[in-house]
Image (tube, rainbow, N blue to C red; front, side):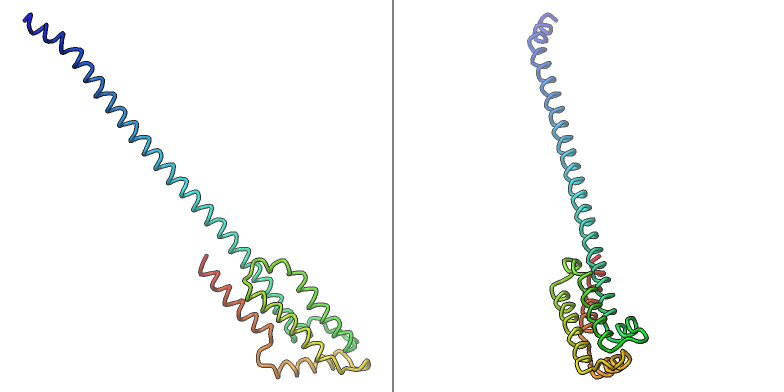
Length: 189
């Protein structure tokens, strides 16, 4: 038994040191596993937050683009010759007065919506600007030979006749393109 105790005294520190080392190694591995788990969870949460932020930003941008498209659709509808005449003609207006009012209205509404151009595509913007310029030319041409004695009704008739001869007014072309682009935006969101 003496020998057993002697061996136990010599082996005990080694056994204790071995158990402590195994325990420390095991706890170290557990710590590293937990740390990796926390890192992965943090990274996953960061990715989710980034994705949500990107989606939220994308949704905001799409909403701004849609609002701009809505405003320009309204503008293009309002500068159509028939709508201009119906909205702006008043009894007793001369042809020149109506022409002036129509041209002023086209320009003012365009200027009012000018800042919205940053939210629409370059081709859309070009078509809208072209529609404005062409409608100004159209109204100017319709009223070019009108005398001071002619009434707003005379100018209105001339505008309606000229519009009936045009297959696609520039405002209609721009509207068609803008609608197509808006549908594309709606499929993205």
